[in-house]
Length: 98
Image 1 (cartoon, rainbow, N blue to C red):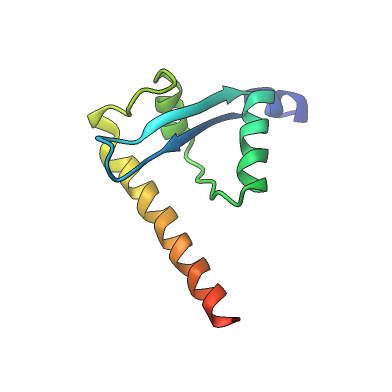
Image 2 (cartoon, one colour):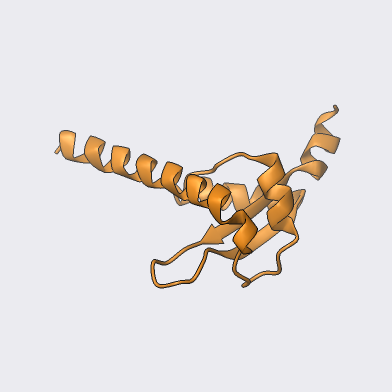
């Protein structure tokens, strides 16, 4: 696959979850240039990125600001656990070097 097609086919979805929310919300999504900008912002803000093309495709169908549907709770919960574990490891590393 050439680089241009790969770039144009790239998709990204940003989720936000607060403990008081019913479910995570889709707060950003896009393909191509927009996806690249979402990923760039994640990198700049040290937000973990989880790659799952099937989940990304499923989440692309959800409107911005909407909660994820119940059928995606389990898979998104596993992503949130993964991110939580990364956050805990980072916090441990920071304390280790203080």
